[in-house]
Image: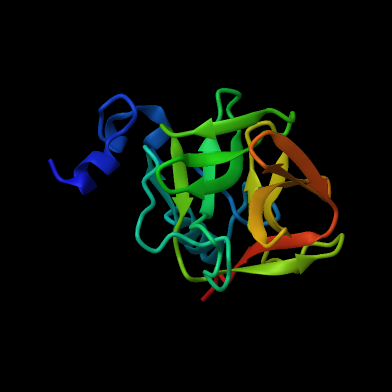
Amino acid sequence: MSSESKRSKGCEGKEWWEMGEFWTPRQIPVRPSCSKSITEMDQDSNRRVRKSWVPCSGGFVPRGAFSIDDDDDCSFSAYVGIVWTDNMEWVPGMLLPEVGVVGVTRSGQRFTERCRYSALVGNYFYWYPYLKNVPSDDAVVICNHSGANFCIGRIEIDGVYYVGMVHEHILNVRYKENEISKFEVFDILCGDIFM
């Protein structure tokens, strides 16, 4: 078996598409409004961005994954990932090769997910400085079933970028393995989804 085949296997030895309901397409609205009335243009955009979340497992990173560092000069490779929790919520975090996605939930619990996560793929995303306001309609907003919407943010600490959930104008990131830090000034993930 090639190393590529091994890396695409799930944690239970199954291919990612065999791992059940998580891997079926879920609606991930990306507009600031979670309204059920979506225009035809929004439907096309929503499909394009939804396809940008590529299901993975076992620390695998797909080709074209969106890097946390704009210049790729980070001392290690890190990407934007998202997980589906047992509480039926999406939670973003850092996707680290061979590790999976690490982050912190809205309730403040640390997590590391190797079996069920998706990687953000595409070159039409960018980071924008966040100063208490979401930049126009470009911010990528995720709507959870609970109705709690959030954005994805990043912060540079000691020359290393960390990614986490932006909720109620605060970025929560998992820092130095076991610490959770909160920030009010950070970059927010945006997307040119009407290109």
